[in-house]
Length: 118
Image 1: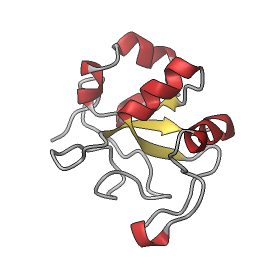
Image 2: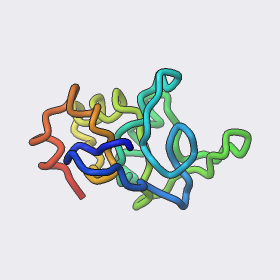
Image 3: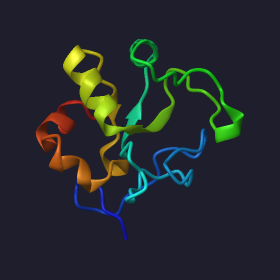
Image 4: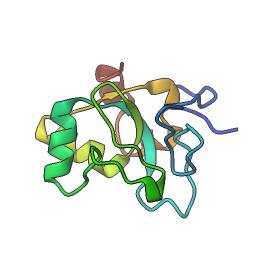
């Protein structure tokens, strides 16, 4: 059983759009997930624009990867390094703590996550 940053069972981040490295709705992790899709966020237009400008377009649909494209208000298992980059630049996406994998607290202090929780 995977745990979240609160030490409880990891819950689903989003079923629509279906998210996660495994596209199972959860921000699970595995060795093959080099992007670390472990932090569940609620995206904003401001964040999506920042991400696109940094080379990660999360707006444009890519059906070949089962990716519908995101819009403001969607929840998504984001790559942890992108969240940290956005946070440092002032474009922090809010975090759904119950759906964020416990491994995230190895890189981001739990109090920072709480300050930006949904």
